[in-house]
Structures are given as structure tokens and as C-alpha cells.
Length: 528
Image 1 (spheres, rainbow, N blue to C red):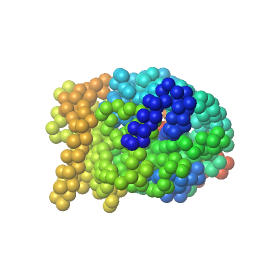
Image 2 (cartoon, helix red, strand yellow):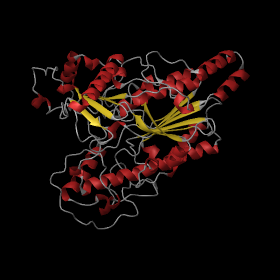
Image 3 (spheres, rainbow, N blue to C red):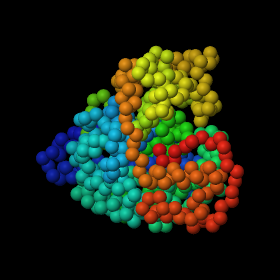
Image 4 (cartoon, helix red, strand yellow):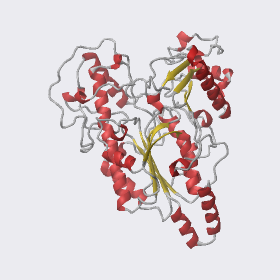
């Protein structure tokens, strides 16, 4: 807070003095916030041995790598809305996916924030920062966000030359002002394009991977392993994109006074991760670098997506909006003594339309509690429709026990529900109280069971989302592979999934060994 007071005073004194303004701007850091779409802990710096990620590993070695960083919800738009408003999705209204900015025909019946939200880029611009975005915004209404520079193509973030050109276009035209750069790399989101003009250089084959430990053994199949290999290949391209950005910063002499934050907007798009309340969906890489200003370290402090807005505003010397649930990370980054939070809450409401299953979670250093709100014994199901009928429209509704309690030390992937165990009664009661207090303090509307019932009825009548061509093609590709027991569909030749993308790496073989089909593999949508 001291830094914010000093910067605010300096800016006030400089208001009528151009030279003083220039000095004040030079004292304030540039801020770069980078999201990688669906990126989990599949990085070398987090112990992964399959991914090739030297640039992100270097960023982590020179900065602070957080092991307990949590997005607010494991869904793209909801998670990003929290980064840009400092609020949880139930506070700002972005409870599920928004419509795509560059494709109005997709998800036109998606979700949007409530009107008149105060947003990070707007506040930073008012504080004298030049603001820019590359890649998808995917939060609505888009007019809420005041960016000076916009390049919203998702495909261009996979093309290293276009990415370099777009980074140079913004970073080369800051007008001498400090800047806020919001860079959104579309990888490793589906469709998993194995090659874009030679990138990434390192491709991953199905034979190199296993199903992730957070998945069930029944999820294993040749088709699933190919999905994971394709996902890893896209993670490698994320790293090359990070290399491009760091090269541009270095070439322009911008490294020394620039704070760089990298995180995954939600976990990997595999069972029991993305679009769930499991840790694999909300606990993602959080890396913060500020050359010469931060002591390199690994931190187990519990931080969240709502913490970045107060952090950035304090660095900019800007006034914080009232009522933000997050905290500035600057005391942690500076290594200042003091007590940090001991627990953190996350949520899930919906993703695409017809994925409703409201849950609320809280975790401390060891235990985690999740509530499935539609299974609350106090909740009365609408008389107009039964749960069985409702699941024909909303198949995820009321899935999961009402109370789920996990020992994250002994069961980090949450397979054994300990709720109701007498020896953990005190733990369960404590976490329940903490979760309730968070919901009350952040004014969670679904604390009101009448509001929960109204949401159920509202979502009953939503038409299904339009499914774009690339999703239909990708679903068919992996469904066919799994059903036939084939090890790798991409080894049968190029598959054009989206505008002549090349899907086969140089390592691909011309024939595929056939394995027996796995009859009990659970349905999985890799495009979620």
C-alpha cells in the first residue's frame, strides 16, 4: 500500500508538469498479463517430463512460481472475467461462457456480466497506462473493456510470425507511457493443431504419454492418449509463443521495468479437470516475473485470480474500487512479513448452456470441501419438472454428492470422499463455516434457495449452443479413434479441422497398430 500512496502523491504533484509526468510514468512498471487457454501443470518447471517448455521454465526460475494459484471458476469466460474485474463470477454475472467476439453466431445465447462493471483495463487507462489486448477477450459485454489496441484473432496467436508482428505493433507504439498488455495465447485449447508453419518444433506422440493422474483408469484408451499427445504438442507451442514475447521485450529494452504474469485460465480439457470443481480444473500455473525486483523462489502461498486487479492497480498508483474480494500480492512479492490467507474459495455454476451444476468449494493447506447446491436437502426441486426430465436438457445437473470432503495431502486428486467421517467432523464444520462466510461476504445469490430454483427454471428453456464445424469434426475424429481402438488418428495422414491446419508432425508413422477397443471408456468431449 505504501507504494500506491507514493505513486499517487507523485502523480498528483506531476499533474501540471510534463517533465514530472514523464518521471512518474518511468517509475511505474509496465504490466503484462498472459493467459494460456486450458493450460494445466504440464510444464517442465512444475515437474512435467513430457512437455518441452524452456522459455516458461526460464521465466519461473527468474521469478516466483506459485504452486497454489487458483482461478475462480474452471471455465474460460468466468475465469477471465475475474482477472478483469477483480470479482468472482457470481458477483459480476459472468457465470458461464460468453459469445465469441469474432464469431457472433457461436454461443449467441451465452452469458454476460451485469451492466456497469468497473474493469481493469479501463481503470489502468484512466491512470495513464496505454492498454492493449491480443487474442480472445471472451467476456461480455466487450464494450466494457477500454483497450487502446485490439487484435482479437485467436488463430494468429498460434502463428509465431503473426504473433511477433502483433506484439511489435503494440509494444512499439506505447507513446512513452507505461503499458498494460493482455496477451491471450489460444493454445493449448482445442482444436489441437499439431503444426502451424513449423511450430512447435517438438511434437509429442501418443506413445510418449499416459493418462493424467487426476483422471480415472477407465478414461484410458488409444484415442485418449492421442488427445493428450496433441494437447502436449500445443503446450510446446505456448512455450514458443512465450519465447517470441520475451524476444520482443528484450529487443525493445522493456524487460527491466516490466512485470510479467503467466497463468492458465483453467485446467486441461480432460475428465475431472476443466469444467469441474476438482483441483485439476482450478489450480493452474501462476508465474510472476519482474527482473531485478523479485527474489526467485517457489511459493506455496494460496493466491487467486481475484488478486491480480488489486495488485496491478496498486502498482499503477490507481485507486482500488470498493468491495474487491482479492488482495494485492505486493507484500508476498516483496517478501514482507505478515499473515497471508489460509484458505480460498472457488466456484462453478455453468459453462456452455446446458452444463448447469452449481457448486462452491473451499480449501486450506490440507483439506477441501465442495458443495453441490442442487443436492442440498433444503433445496426443493421445481414441481413442474423432475430431475430425470431436467437432465435431458441439463445432463450435469445435481451430479456429485451434496458434501464432498477431501484430504488433499493423502488424496490430491480427490477420489475418496471423506464427508461425514467422525474423526473429520471438526474439519468439515470449519470449512463449512468458512465457505458460508465467503458466500455471504461476496453476496452469492445462490445462497437464496429461491434464486437457485429460479436459475434452474431459467436454464431449462435455454436453446442449445450452436456447435461450430471445427468442434463437430474434432469430436468425430476422437470418437472414431476411441471406438476403433486406434493408437493415433493423426498418423493416418493430414486432417483438416480448421482452415487447412496441418495436424500431422514429422514423426508421424504411415500405418497404425490396432489395439482392442475399450468398451467402458466414459464419454468425453475434448472441445469443451
